[in-house]
Image (cartoon, rainbow, N blue to C red; front, side, top):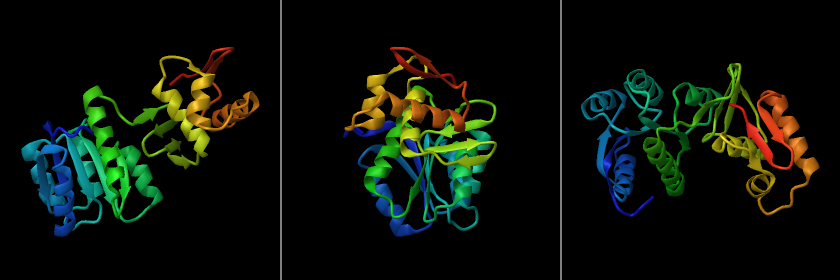
Length: 226
């Protein structure tokens, strides 16, 4: 993010631990001007109504109203606000809720500054471009490209790293064919890619989502039809 403080975006930070909240706000002040705080979910609901924030960062485990219930209440009233959730636990149902509530990111405690910064950059970019990280692939499949979660018929389907990278690359360029060179650079990175390896990767990915969702143009590359 730029070192110039953003004075357009309003952030609401929700955390019941005073020290954690103060430290986080001190960090956020490096990048944003309009920062508000709440000590629990109930307080956060009041602040949300008062200030109408653009970005919400909330802990899950809180008294009165927990973070997910707070996020659910927010989503019923506002579909555009960017929500980052902080948790000390990694549970499958949290990943399901991430898609259901269109959360930008789950961050695990203790929070790493670079992870929070990356998540905030995603939020700012989403607000600027009116985009979302939750992509519906077809009637039964949904992909969360920030949390790398594929949901098919409300069940989480595990993706390998290269499958995740390829799906993300195709979705980020969904209006065109992605070239073989681009795929090699993004998915294989510093290693050479063979055509057989790419065909195998495409085959396994199609088996998990749908055989019709990815199309190929010989000599050009691949395109996702989502």
